[in-house]
Image 1 (cartoon, rainbow, N blue to C red):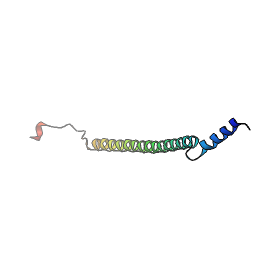
Image 2: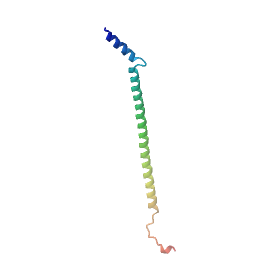
Image 3: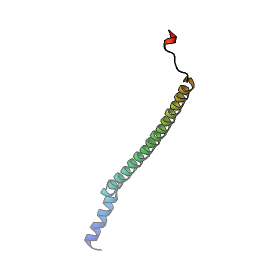
Image 4: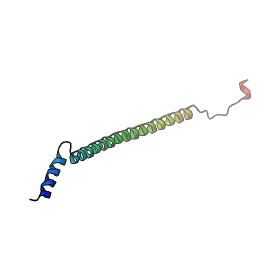
Length: 87
């Protein structure tokens, strides 16, 4: 083993320690992956909520429209109105 090999091994061990560059980069990459996963999960939950609310709102609007149309049709009088006879 040469002196260069010994220096390389010492540097590798030093960089792999708790405060070494390899450990710091690994920790930062792991943190970034965790944050991205949480962001993706949050986005999926919000998208599901919005989709559910849109579908619910559409169903409510359709039911209200159908009820109002049915009520209008039921109260519509098919006989002509005598405006002059009302006075």
